[in-house]
Amino acid sequence: MRLKDRVAVVTGAGRGIGEAIALAYAREGAHVVVNDIDPATCAATADLPEAAWDTTMNIGLKGAFLVSQAAARHMIRQRSGCFVNIASVAGVFPYNWAGAYSVVKAGLLMLTKLMALEWAPHGIRANAITPGYIRTPGTEAMYADPDIYEGRRRGVPMGRVGTGEEVAATAVFLASDEARYTTGSIVGADGGQAVGYFLSVPGRRFSGGRID
Image 1 (cartoon, one colour):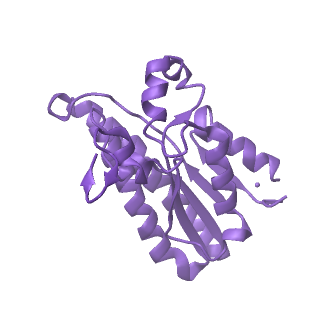
Image 2 (cartoon, rainbow, N blue to C red; image 1 turned 90 degrees about the vertical axis):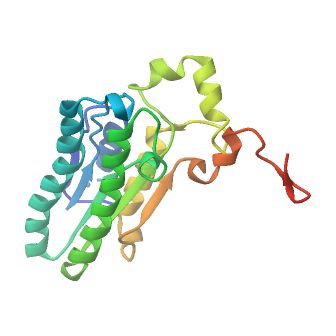
């Protein structure tokens, strides 16, 4: 059991990826904090209500900051601890019609790096995971549409949509002693989606110095 006798705080553990992580930590026996709250509002940036922007920022980024800050005060005293923040490939490549969500996830990546830099002298690590297309109970209705599933699957080099359990396995590794020299890292759990952009657009194959 890689997390035996440790304490884990998982925000957003009621469903989806957060639930999968909480269950995986429990199985590994689980000072770990997981921030995984996704208050996404889908709208074009020009039409996004200010209230929706504020809610997304307050929950997704400010909430992660406040939870991490409160936990870090205890971890600094005990000179050990670990943070695993759940971001998204949307924090690296913006999602159309999900501008506030993308900005929150990009901010969470920078917050993770800042936490790693400032708190490393206290024995505290901080890393982030960037899931890609993940099938969970919350997204099941969407992926039940074969056209949506096929369209997303084609954009993933590994050829399929991932599962919450696969993200959770990455979270267990980052929280374990196996990753004791890993901090400030952004770890993808996306089947190669972040590097497979040309799979989802026309003219994606390079041949003889040109794009076919």
